[in-house]
Length: 180
Image (cartoon, rainbow, N blue to C red; front, side, top):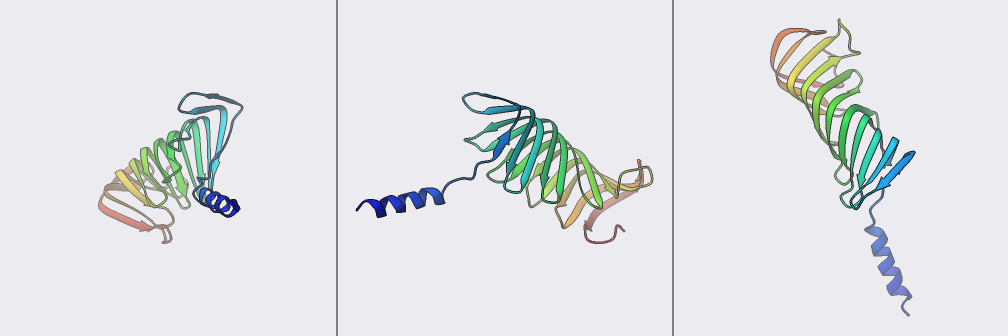
């Protein structure tokens, strides 16, 4: 007679269950608040793959802090960085020294903050194709990248390679449109 109550309680617990990431590394150690995975750590969660020399993971906050040779891959997007903090709950992140791209755009910057909807890159350098000395290039104090949609900025400079003499007060470009 308690079976229906048990089934309903189990169903409600399973419905509210949070999916956990899969994390692996050659070495790991645990503290009161986190587990440190080192020696080439790998975290997979939904459609996300996070690789780094070391990943500190806090299961209570669901935050992963990756350090050294960080690579974040989510769908067609790929981001390389020195350091990254990723919140698995709301899919937001902060990054130091980033390099990212979604062809035909390649972006680098000193810091990034954002999530799946938009990304703000500070001290941004945007190249329109593979970076080289003859590639059209844009620099800006900050640049907003909307994955699969557009790039926009204010007070930028545009040019070729490292020579960017043309000021651009406002810039917005669809990633689906031709470069110019």
